[in-house]
Length: 161
Image (cartoon, one colour):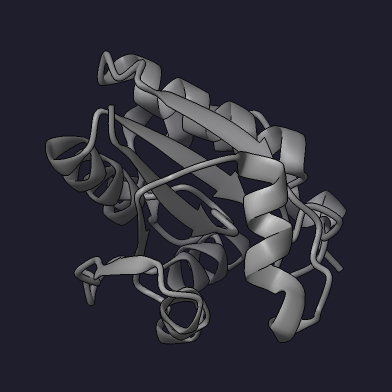
């Protein structure tokens, strides 16, 4: 059984992330999704709590009938030299890392881990989605429907300073 590792902040989980999970599952039997920067929340860059991000991912994958995944929540350690070992200690074994972040890819490659670069979708980015949400503009089409429904139940403007 092969396992792919997919690391991100998922602030929020969007259609690009969903496409990435599907890519992993087209090449692996299961995916471990690492929700990083777990200690960060209620800021402009990290508006969602780790628990909310997990709920967004679960809702999105359930609506797609995807069940071959697990979520691991990790706080930052801010030490590149130790980071890959830190992640591996918490997630267990995996065969490949899937990432659109060249820094993450280089850290895993340096440790001899196979890295697959996921394609980025120009018009879909979490930074843009956050900006549209806080600006009161349309953003819903960039996220899975289940994610849009959940985000609408949160009053982010009240929480984000």
